[in-house]
Length: 536
Figure 1: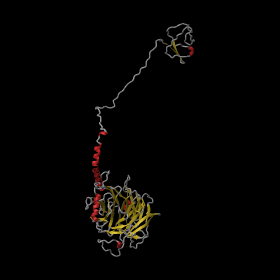
Figure 2: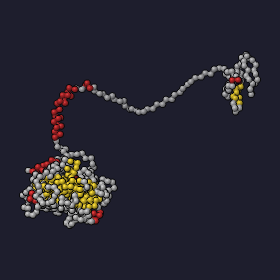
Figure 3: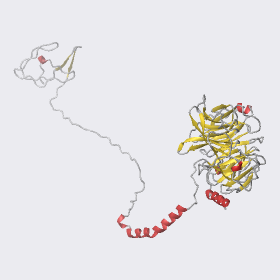
């Protein structure tokens, strides 16, 4: 390598510098620490200084030169790792699959043709079987005992000595409402009373603090929630008025009222029922019955008014004659209505309970004019079609079967429950459940042969006619002091719930055991058989 001073090239420190100058070579310029000009001569191998010129100073090192070329080679190394992911101790056995071509298709087809008629016959037999009629899969937890879930009450009403006179579940099955009034003798027309409601599905339910309270200027004797509007409830008053409230409007709950006019009942209202308007299944009217002998249909109109649309009157002389009925004394014309129940199969057909103790089969389609002088803005008609054999006293409750078009129950002051067929006057069964009054009776909405009754001895009796037609399956003690139970209602949405109201001003919500909520095998057939025996 020829080092030329004038090129300004710097050699790094520690490198070997070799100058080979031939004759006529170039002399390097003198510089700091360098010898003077060299003479022309041939040099062999010699050690020459290697210099590094830098700002910090100059380092000088002497290195030896080597003329033999250095052999170089590239080498690479690779590490290899091997990991076993799984271990198998036995050799896999190959699965032999028979080719489709090896099946005997003709023989299989012949077998299927041979058994086809037999299989279809058995399937048709199963399809026509009634072995599982009424059976529904129930995923809810089995409840072995009847237990009290809630004891509800409104202290201001209880402090006044008011009774729970009516009870109703709303259309969702989550809200129970009760009417406060008095059923015993006395002038309660000016007594302030209440309608109260509790949401039993709400967390933090306070049994003595209703979610809605409506103050009413007269005793409320009956109550009925709207079939589709969960917050609308109708009530009948001791004064003869019918009112409808919206419980979702606590500041101004009153929607409609009949007012005190010539159309209004002149006696306390016994019961109110919601009915769909003819031709308008989404619009409803309120039907009311009272001991003045009138059955009235009301429609809500503007300005908060309930307007009379149809009316019926019960006149003794127009009742169908029954051999069991005594001769009617002169001067007694109007027949007081104490209870009403509509058929689940014919929306025009209904049963009335009366003060005379005899049930009446009636129809909204009746066209005969009522022979009465009672004032009315609409013509009053005579609805009765059949008179049934009477109880030993006034009837307090009637209930039509939701599972059979001809069967209904009645309960009265004689302590008896009668099971009737609409096809004949005498009852099929007469059961004495109490030595005192029976104030309420209701069919179960899910069990065709189960009903409940409320007695004047403070108990609720649950009957299962599939088990016994003589004694109750379960007797629930509602009041410890044997004060009367005035009303009860099954919950058609949450079918394990039954609510009952009593003379202590208390509403108790009972959870029924599973035997009262699951339909038994052939229960519907047993009910049909019972009805057929009545009709013969």
